[in-house]
Length: 369
Image (tube, rainbow, N blue to C red; front, side, top):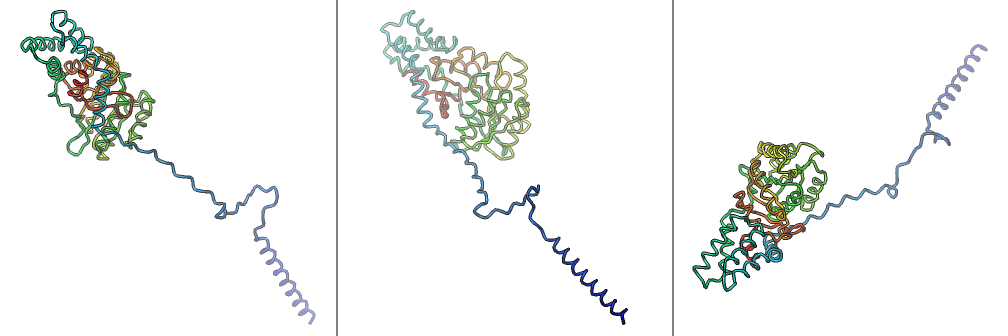
């Protein structure tokens, strides 16, 4: 009997012990808040009022609408009249004399040569004027001079920009020139002309030797919503040009305009590299236009530059910058005679839309005032 009693008491004690153990284990599993000085920090989720506000989306820069051709030509006439009118007025004053003697004709020649018309074109113009005014003694000197100047500037040249490609490929415009001629700015302004004509454009920043030129071109592109393809500073210009044209082909744009590093015409290595740029581009698409940018104020030195560049990359058109700041408008005639290619664009100021198609009639009328 006593044995059974001890057995029952033992079972009861064991049961109580198990229950106490289970209760303690359950309490140990409860997560307690960290004590002061603990490394663990529990941050409760923020309430709706405390939740951080979303960062504002970056505001895209406003895309500008470039001027159309009509307003550019109006400004062309106005600014050319201010900067070039002295030449025409000087010639008309001489031609309107009662007697056109040898001294007068010599003065006419000097006026034309000073305006950078060039020796051969000057001689042609003077000979034609002498013949016509001698034969028709009562002819209007202004009308005769206008006709002869138009003939000298050559109204028959095709001055359209070749900015369209074939077989679904974009037109490719390669812009070249010496340092300081305004080449990168001209590329940006050409982009504005094309955008004003509702053409899609990609710019290639292949002037990789000047970080400032790349940034400058990027700014021009940003202003009119045009993509600019660039590479690391000092990278191979031909590679950047290649990538720009490939991007243009892949995106199906209308025109790719490639800026190149300014080159001194007497540095053979740099000129050879320019030829390489053109060859590499044409692995993707033909170059449809090669524009040589010349500073109109450089005068006859610009002819030397033009000659060398044309031998390397087959120049198809001239862009004359700073024409409004030079009274030597005869460079238009001289450079066309030198290369046998037309002046297609003229720069008339520092404004974003101060680049206009060259209009021979407007130019001659501006010369005459």
